[in-house]
Image (cartoon, rainbow, N blue to C red; front, side, top):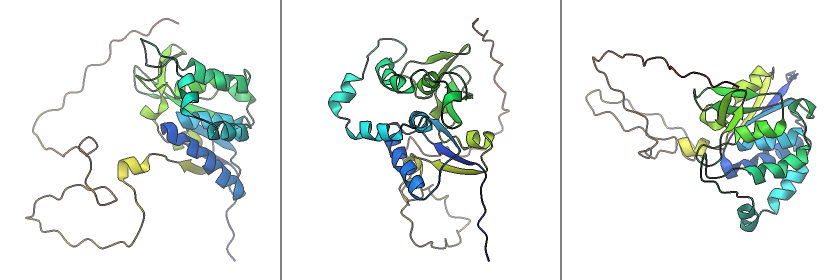
Length: 249
């Protein structure tokens, strides 16, 4: 008799993906229909927004709000700026701030973390305490679109730049089973609809190197193609350390 392993702590990871992020609502619904209730949730960018709403117990409200979205509603939420980013993000965040009602991350119904990126260093930052609104605002700050967020003496931008699907964060929150939703896999690897696996014949060593293909069998677009491996005799010299002086808080 096979015994199914019981996981003590299930982590839900919601990746970034802009407007695709509303698909996270359907993924959460599917998990609940299957009797799976995550114990911790973390997210990047739009995944952080949906994850925070879910951790606050307002997924029904979010689904209803998204289903009523129109172009007119979206335009009314835009607050154009001339510096730091195209949009300030104030109107969008205020809509959700009213729902969070000043709660901190510690006051949510389950452990939650949002991922952002330090603008100066490119390092990822795990936001697990403090204001829910501030954490989400930092995680969705797409450079050039939304203005960066000043947090603990550093400027933070979209977490998708450093950790688009933060499985490592869920592991760090002691999840022994991680369920991750990646919204952008088909962009990088092409749409993979499965099918028979065909053995690749042995290649002629004298033949030219084959072109790198995506999993769907199509060539990579030029802007996404992997860099060619080049063997040179040049000595690689590491760049000089940064001389940037941290700004005083």
